[in-house]
Image (tube, rainbow over all chains, first blue to last red; front, side, top):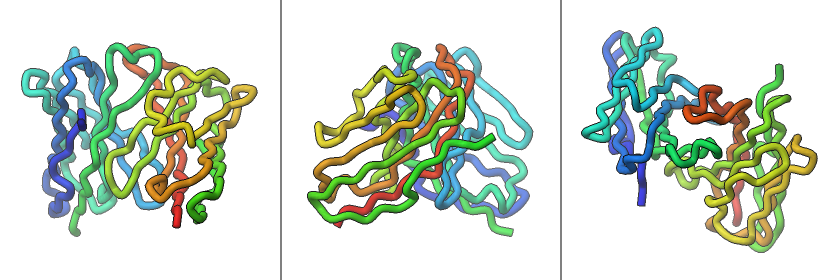
Length: 115
Length: 117
């Protein structure tokens, strides 16, 4: 029973265009969401996050949108650069696990930005 | 400042053998997590230490897995005896504080790729 789903295993975009990565979740107790980026042979690195009290958070070229009613979030990268090519993981944190910091991850979306 | 370090980076063992993975968190981080990614699927939580205490071990697959964090510094994850389905990449992460919104995000190590043959 996967609580965080990234239904697109891969995405290919042209340099300079917008990349949109999507994530759906099923657990209404999730109250904090994160995106991690992972390069081959490296660990995931934190990219951007959003709490459930917001619907948008922006950091430079990266914006995360949260639609709680639809249980959906998305990561927008504008403009996309070849160095953004990586696996992107969506993750969520449960309210009731605030003492543990346990993250629930999606299966990842591989983004390829073509020059 | 050194990041989260894990060793070995790669381990190939035979079914039935024992393997011990090690994680050195960022200095001063009380929270230490173990995660596993199997066959390109999602990254799954295994357990969480706060200092030397196990805060949450709900993700540990079975009793063949034993995690320790003696003295609240580095941690080890032992798999004994290893089975084929234990193959995957084991990640360790650490964070400084854990609050409702985990505002200090977890930093991950590069992972240990375990292959059981």
